[in-house]
Image 1: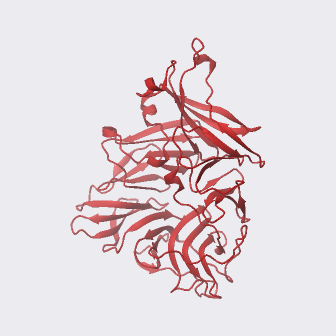
Image 2 (image 1 turned 90 degrees about the vertical axis):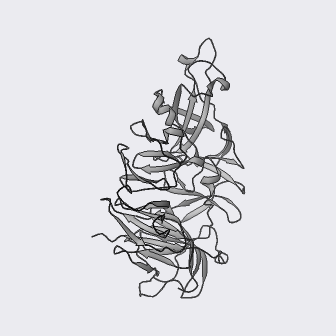
Amino acid sequence: MKKLTIILVSVFFLYGCRKNEVEKNEFPPIGSGSHYSISGIKSFVTKTSGLFLYQITDDSRFEKVKFINTRGKPVFDTTRTYIKDVYMLDPDYIVFEGSFVLTDDETEYESVLYSKKDSMFHSFPDQIDMEMSVRFLLSENFQEDGFKNVYYYNQVFPKNVIRLALPDFNSGSVLSQSFNEVEFLVTGKGDLMYRIGEIQPDEDKFSVKFANGEEGEVTISIPVDPEFIVDGVNPVKTNLGLWQGADKEVYLLTGWSKSAGTPENLEEGFDVKDIYQISFSSKSIQYERILSVEEQDVLSCLMINRLSQYKIFRNDLVYFVSKIADGFSGIKGWSFNHKTKEVKEFSLPYRKDIISLSYSDNYIFLAFEDELIRMSFDNFSYSSLLYVNPDAFYISKLGASNEDDVYFEAIRSSDTHRVLGKIDKFGSLSYIDEVLKGSISTFLRVN
């Protein structure tokens, strides 16, 4: 039987001191032989009480996690080390934030970078802005170009977008000056388009730091095919949003009416929505139309909004799931395959807003306060996982393993206990903790 482990990260205290004078571009290994295997860990969880890092084992026991070196000794001081947050920088690299005091020489770090490939810890001098995807419509916390470089916004002065090459650990600032707030998108060639400050959804002007080091300004001006120009009048086209696809390229969704018109007469919807791949050449923006969509059912689901959507990558597809219900239509979503150029829509009628979402290799799991839905990636068929249980649950957080098990935090109605439950891939319910102290902030899949 595979070992299934979840990590519980306790959260309470403010940051400790970052290691003094760690130079940019340096991510040296920490300690001597500081190996720690996480091969059996499926996900990390942040928890709002306590100080320690915990794991849930395959036989449903809580255990404190100790980072052990090759000699079987703790890498970090177990009484002065705590975890505030944990996130994936890349599928092979994890960042832990909090306070980490080495047992060897009592050096203290605020953030450490863990490499899954060699089980080593490295100093990590940056502080990543994990709220970017909430504040801005374009950005995700981490993006990659086609050359395995990871991009993120560093809040440590001088604040800038960082390009980090893995596994070489070479990094540096991308933009020529620092900014307190910036949203950005990276193309596969390494061109970085960005905007500063609070951005309106219909803002179409961008600055670009090109991969060759040059800089420029671009405005999205969506081309109109001559066949749709009637009596010399262009139809109205609107930029509906951009995103980075599973292939690391940048895509643009547009909406327009076949007949000439004004934005005022498009309020009831668009006749056509197009998807373009955009790139840059000689400081100018290039458009390649991937497909046009006219089916009404698909048009109603096709949208881009970072503030009210979940985004999931799976193989060659990207999935967008609306967090907010659309009346009796419930939850809507769609998928885009950059290889086959296909768009498919799905809906969950008569549902309210999504409380939490997670996913495994085969399913999307959605929590609707007192309902837990499992939806297939392949055909969007779905079923409820809690309807056979006599207890009612008011769910707050979900976390799924690769093996299609799902963990959830909820209030159990029969006794009002906060519980951490598990539903396996066969639909059987069990409890990991029935008197959970504090609440879970985040589940994060590791493997």
